[in-house]
Image 1: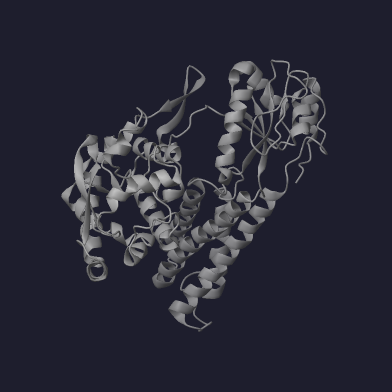
Image 2: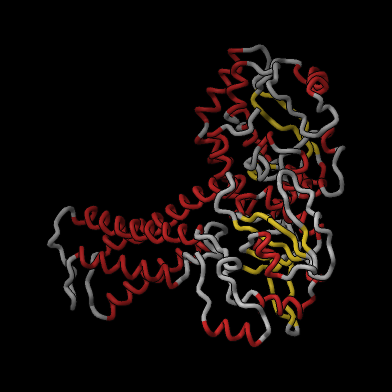
Length: 505
């Protein structure tokens, strides 16, 4: 949707000698965000209306004559409508539908929760100040149910948006201001992370002359590289960009960056500056001003915290609880393995754990006896004998029961006893065999600074379908940015991945 330029902005642009805004070319923001926000508006309103109606019926039945006691003496239908209106307005005042936060990150959810708690607090204060007697049971149903409903509605919209972005819809076109190399890295990064909703459509190098036929080497995309023979507005027009990312300030300098913000004034174009810092979680990044200069402060890696007592206590309590809950499944799986094939119930394999120490990892046996001796030949047959992650697709060594146990990761459940012994954690990098560890470089060795886990970030991001490089990158990201909240999220994603049996073989 195009934004009308105010007289004030037009006058300021004229005073600075900037060209007038061509609202048919430069203001090219598509109405994708507007339609997405309209969907959130409607969904929020529907959730709140349904919440108050459910709370009233749940607590009072279908009695429409029930009223609050106090100066207003409202019926609960009118009271519910008032709550809906105030709640909906607070969601707007807390900018829960702001374009810069919707669809990605935790800030959207936090703002929804803050607005909800504030409305609940206000209702409680009003009831005390004005002696307005209202049903606590009604409020105890309405507010938790409303918060869950609002968060669920946002999640549904995010899933829809993510699916749309994966097929190329609802993407913002990005003009990268910087060098071709940083532009190419950013283009490849956003291609791998399509969920971010950004697509590089051009690079502008404002301090260099480029050839007319120069473009980035990115598969299946034509991304032109423009030089100083084009101005910013030409670059925006050619690339049809609605977002500008400055990837290399050396091509601008701080004063030229300030001028760039002035040139974009009045345009419906987002401006971002990339610090070229990747694989850091947002909680470790802080921006502060030093002598008037904004600097980015990066916190130390979190792998030391991953070995502290809160994680160890959580691991053992979780393992004990899981063994108790899954004991019928454990016994059934053990019986099935024993009755359907010759050999032991459990398979013990030497794995590399914390600080390179070896331990015996337990699994339900899913292959015929002597399967290890056949691995080298099978890897050579599929052409992966020189690669880490010794996995065989359509493995002929699997037993019938073993294939089922593998598909739903039931064969991994005995590792709960490894967790109880302290050899493993519930969440962490996957423990690997010595032959795989021998292929580590210095970067990969950071996986060994925390206890290995039954599940981890790379398992829930694709499991065996991921490349070795992606697996190492995800595991080192986990090590560097560990948090207990992150572990809980990975456990939830593990449950979804196991149910869907994605990437399991």
